Length: 154
Length: 409
Image 1 (cartoon, one colour):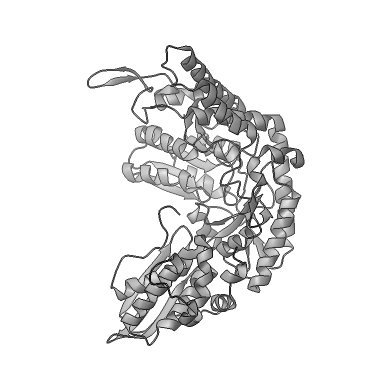
Image 2 (cartoon, one colour; image 1 turned 120 degrees about the horizontal axis):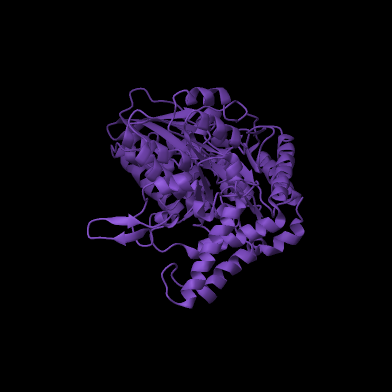
């Protein structure tokens, strides 16, 4: 059985209370909206990509601690990375949360993002943790329609 | 107060352990647990008298039909309906309201007409009227609520000046717990010439309901919120209105004679019960009513109100907790927020202590906008809950505050 402390790690509580990059991005050339209507989690993501490098990224919105901390830590993790590196991080996080082939053998290789490894034991909250990542994926893919990580069975 | 120590063994699910804790089920406004007599009634129906109703020429089918029609009489008695045929069995409140919108509404609402709803209506007493108004080119007028979570009577009166065709409101709010002055609202709406639809999803399980003294025209209820099976429920309506209404679903059972190109309709209530009905649900609902009647609805109401008062008092002692809804005239529904902790995080933390609460918008998004919150946490009580459950709730809420280092909002 998993403990609450596995879910609400200090890193997550800190980023929930003080989200980083919680702002709009001047001159953004990528953007996407994430929305989990049943939950009420909403994220609006803006990115300025220069060549293939993510120069600046910011988010706004509201939601639970997991979704907010996830968005905050994601922006920190991908800033300065190439879009290809960000996409491969997206797959690693997605598979770590959902259980998939691209899950890192050792979550600590993800640095601070390893804080989300415990979410897997709380199936109802996986959609909160991956909303920001799916929103980033949509922004980098130039997808216009809002993203959701809620399935019809929620 | 009810003797919960005696009642709880009737509910097998309450023996379940959740994360090593006893199950503290406080999501009764969403659905209630089922006592043995209801479970037994459903099983006994299939074990002893199952057959298709209203058509068999054999004894078993007659027994099944009697059980189904007896269940209708039981529901009629429970809410003091005008007659047994005033009770149309449905899948629940949502289908009941859609029946009214789809049948009475489509036959009577015209372009330019007004339909009135309130800002505290559940989506199921709002969206069917949105659909109807969009189809008919009618206007939907939403009545505002007061700061303490009641229907704003001045705005209600203003809305009635439009001479609406129909006025819909909840007897008890699922999000706030407010018990609305339903008889008074119905009287005012009738005086303005409107037909009155009461959403009884949250009142039927918790108060003594008398549709004749309310004098509403349509009253919708759900069985699963009052100890009965999922998919049980009814529309209770004035028989003269039902007589005049066109059918809702076409199919078997609802017809009298069928020709190549047209049909004539069965008597009410069968006109509205096309297809093989959910007999198991009706039988289960009747068993739930017998159970509640044995407890006494006045005592059920008193029990829940006492629990709600205690829960509100105890929660408000925690710095940073805000409880929503009026101070009095409320049922056993306690919506709250705690500082800047998101209600979903609260629900996850409480779940680890075996406590089930609802977190979210409770299918009342227009109301949440007016409260200025994206979501609330909601504890709601029923006959098997007691003060121990409130103790567990309060301990777990405080624990959440410690974990998050809560900052009062």
